[in-house]
Amino acid sequence: MSSTATRNYAIVTAAYWGFTLTDGALRMLVLMHFYRLGYSSFALALLFLLYEAAGVAANLVGGWLATRYGIARMLAVGLSTQIIGFLLLSLLDPAWTAAVSVAWVVIAQGICGVAKDLTKTASKSAIKITADQAKDQGSGQLFKWVAWFTGSKNAMKGVGFFLGGLLLDSLGFSGALWAMAALLALVLVGVLSYVPRLMGKNKASKSAKELFAKSRAINLLAAARVVLFGARDVWFVVGVPVFLYASGWTFTMVGGFLALWTIGYGLVQALAPQIVKRSVDGLSHEVPAARTWSAILAVVPILLAVAVYLQVPHLEWVVVGGLGLFGIAFAVNSSVHSYLILAYAGSEKAAEDVGFYYAANALGRFCGTLLSGLLYLWGGLLYPLIGSALMLIICWLVTLALPTSRAQGTSTETRA
Image (tube, rainbow, N blue to C red; front, side, top):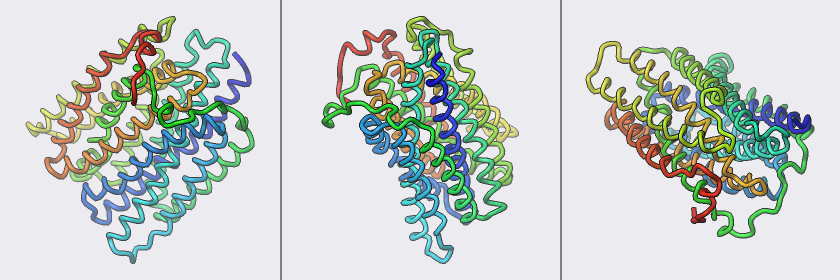
């Protein structure tokens, strides 16, 4: 294996760890701070909407920019943008009216949403490039690196959830944001110092038509990603935290549980190459695995919805256990999908393909976040669980059409 490829992989992964740590802390800071102020479930969802919506455009543009200007520059832009978002949030004044406060937070969150997806697209594209440079890519290096990158990133996000609660208690809302901005500034210095300036730089698409012209495989996988992440966030973003708090849990208990869940979810993602049977061609076993795990995942919210409808005893612990099972199946699904996009993507414009795919990811999070607030407001936890089940059934149906060879995936070009 190329030592340079390994070095670049390690640097990009470490940089994204730092970013993800503060991003997870940010979500918990905003959610808990404003819930404590008396905001409704729908108002809490609104605070995150622009954050998720901004990611759709940021991924598309970020992939094109990373191809044209290189991954190092886009990582630097993403980190700098996140710092700006933190500083804007820290200026929130308690004396402002609720409407002005919400508007300010939504705008600042939108900036952070752009930062997150610029950084994510650049980082995931770097994994494709470094794996292509590794000598043993054919033995599964790409899947291993993607799984470890994605899993460790989500484990770090779980630590961020705990960090957010800790900082909120110890430093307050503004103090916590300043501390996280300082941490990201250190990460930014590392990126500028060690990431190769020309990594990923290539000839970018010259028109929107060319940018959106994706293979059948990438279009299908993007569609599956929309409903997969919508199905998670429709009950995870607002429904579960509010439900547990309403059941008598403290903020520390809720934040601690979500942190442990996310860390465990990340660990399962990192282990996905040991769970999913590998194939020589990289698709013939992996695509059927995506189908199987999608079907398994859909069963969990269906069973939980029945339990909630029947109001079984100790319901909050049933939900906690169900969320654990959901996390295992979702982690394997997500890891396989993250591998498949890089397996389907071309090397020359990998950043553009990855950006398109993660734009679909952001669209799913946006829809899930919006529906999480609305459905919980209309029907408690039951409605978000039903919505999650329906989305996962659609996800499974889409994965049935995924090609099991690169020839099938590129034979028919469609427009995104």
